[in-house]
Length: 385
Image 1 (spheres, rainbow, N blue to C red):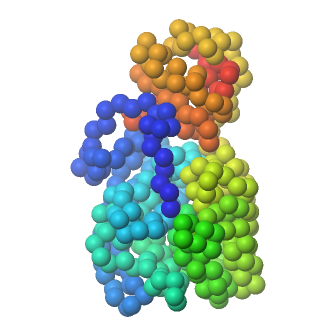
Image 2 (spheres, rainbow, N blue to C red):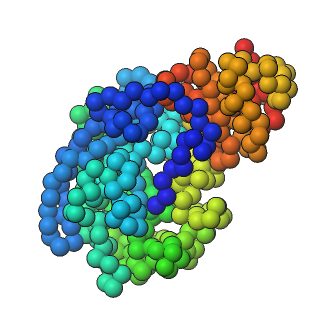
Image 3 (tube, rainbow, N blue to C red):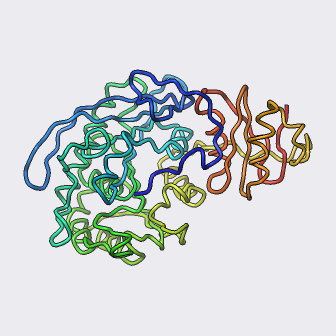
């Protein structure tokens, strides 16, 4: 699984970040999303029958207000090497989480056992290797942790744990499917972003060594699922290829399950990263899916019409400090469309490419908890005083 690109590389304007006792100093804190970290006790068993207990970090983002809000438990994937599984110390998925928070959800992102700070030799998500992969033990171990996080959420007064969703990317998508067939209390639905296991984009591009085993397991468990599901894959996924996800979906249907399936057109060098780099295309699918359950709150305000305040290249008219105009805004002007520039009290941020409007607003307001508005989108100034 590829992690989110550096916020510096995406054109983020940073201020000093002060760490609190609950948050590792090396990671940013999205103050506007009320980000905190909880430690949640979990228990799980690996495929050899070894059971262990740990405390895992769970990154929590929430909307403004007291709630209670419905919840999303958002699950990460699995890096290809042990060294990579030790990083980062915790998962955040800030931009994707921002989308769900703006939809009205609390988002909880667990960093499961065997990753980050709990990388200590116990690996409950090993499938045993490609010679004879076993998919169910790792699926249960991961979903045990999701269910434990959902139970912990019942202690949080701002969470309505009778309305929660499980979602995830790669092995996190596999985890979401397993959680769904187990029907924990309060679960309303699930989204599987490029879920699977056994992929090797370098040694076996597009060919998981667990294709058959995943299909067999999902067919055997499909009839146990009771909630709606959305499956999103990309044609140029270098972990699974284009055909395997279609075969897995057919196995799920043949087993008596239901899931809405979409395979999106190629994106980037590896569509397996579509969850992180193709929000412009997956967000409308997720919007429509959540709307079927009554979650219709828009995640972003509509882009205003051009205001006539200034021409986009009139740098001196941008209502920010001179240094920001000369540095950050010039970088915005040099960037290709789609692009967006946002400003707020004492800060600014811009983004180019995928989900540019949402990311620009997030970069502007995240670190100081300020409210920002769009100044320019593509080649038009939309700012109004």
